[in-house]
Amino acid sequence: MSVRRIALERVERLLDLAWETWRDDPDRARRYVELARKIAMKGRVRLPRRLKRRFCKRCNAPLIPGETARVRLRTNRMPHVSVTCLECGTVYRYPYLREVKERRRKRSVRGGGERGQEEAQR
Ligand SMILES: [Zn+2]
Image (cartoon, rainbow, N blue to C red):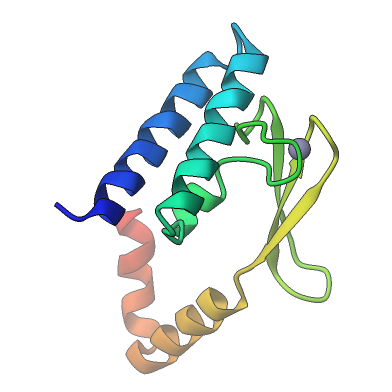
């Protein structure tokens, strides 16, 4: 197994721990995030999106929706997800215009007939 692979696994494990620990011991949870980030840096691994969005880059708090983070969909100017760290107030914005365009494209290709089916499956 490659070093990077191992580093990534540890990072993920530490982030899991940080999420679990937050309620009981926020300081320890922050420490886990800090360690996870250090490991990623040392192993020079680029964190995949799902991991990158799980903590606050500014204050190292795990970003738990409904607990340490406020997550909102917003469509002013551009459609985006806004994640606010409730610990330090930093706001992260993740645009999802590409996904919207993708969906529009699929819809126009398939035409209106199948749309009802798709809705029913949900
Ligand atoms: Zn923060």
